Image (cartoon, rainbow, N blue to C red; front, side, top):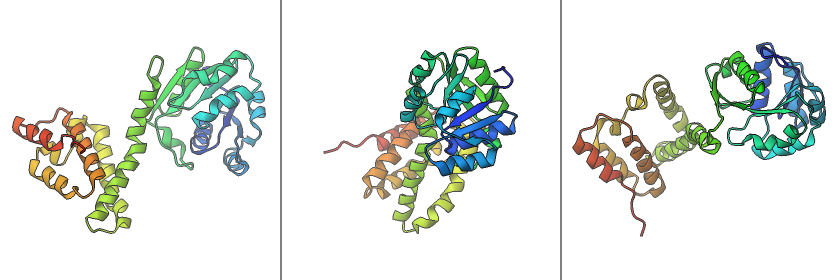
Length: 287
């Protein structure tokens, strides 16, 4: 392997991330030779779209210099134990939460081990441009660390080194910013329905608000990106919201918790408005 190009590359786990990564690597000049997984149909589809061969995991490990394990966290250690790794070969997982210890079996056989974690959500049919501008978490000793940094940059991403980072908290932050936004939209849709509107119209109506907020967050500090009643110190509107949600205690509690988080930003609120909002939004005691 060289720092500019590693190869041949094998992908274990041709799911949403694995398939997107295979296509993106090929688009920027890497040689993805083989893919393996548990679903024959899925790896066959990825192989057909990339020109790679669909094979068993053992063959990926036996023939590829860089093996990317894009499998669920619980499966990484088992795959690492199953392969006949060799010195100089690289075993890389894509987990945000797992440490490199799950690859210890590969390391014991002489393989270099690392992590390449794209901070992005994937649909499975993403274009290579999906990696452009995203942050990619990397952990690996040299020389593999340098190779992975090269891959991240070739994909159009930004490098974030994860050595010494609390991986569980790092990944929890990613979950809050991605997965939990879906939960927030679910709560918004239920509130939309409670207002007397058809729930099947909620996503179409509210998604542009979410996208607009995301664009503001991308380009401005959080306090400046925020709009709405908390940002304005509009105590009366927040009070009306809480009163309207009184019949939905879980939604009211969620609204209050999120609003309290917003109050932690350096908002330009006068002292009285902030004090009133803090009192309104204080956690309610349970009987």
